[in-house]
Length: 229
Image (cartoon, rainbow, N blue to C red; front, side, top):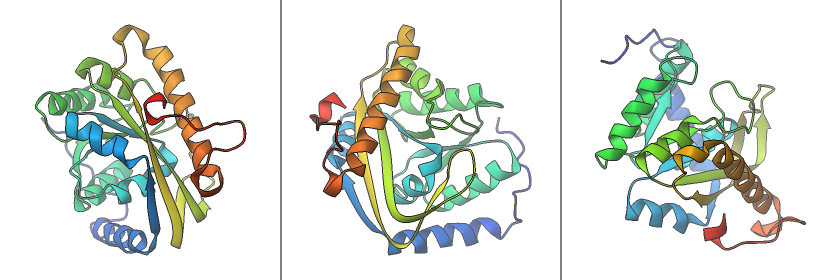
């Protein structure tokens, strides 16, 4: 049974205004993808979990709109607003977070994976951080469902970065936005902690690649085959 939805932050017009603003802003970006085949080939082969950093969710939500992903939103008023916005962007939504309703939300995500439904798209370090520290939820979900984790990182220039815990990033109109993907095999249920460390390492490595000139690896971070990310 779905929890009773609170009144969204900003009132009833906030969601359509924000969703329209996201569409307009994203349409102005110059978007390119790195290792896009990892996402496409993994999803073509079967279900997976899509994971990203909380501070990069504007880019990730906007660039994956309309693909039928399953998003998660907290049970707070801000979460209700987020849920209404991403529904307008073509996502299905489950409600819950690490602090409230998380088990039920993950159960719904697992049921969706088992039924061949929409792949869950989850912010690894949300909703409260610490920044760039993967929580166990996405990995536990992937382990239970025996599916891989496709992780995405982004880089945008120019962009505004808020002074929030996640350094939330808002690419400016006309920004160059790059999104890169990697893949972590289905984690072992008994090795979640080591999987968390490995996922963070791979995401940091991929972010360093994006930071390099023209997508080349940054110094000290040699390029690897996509299967090694």
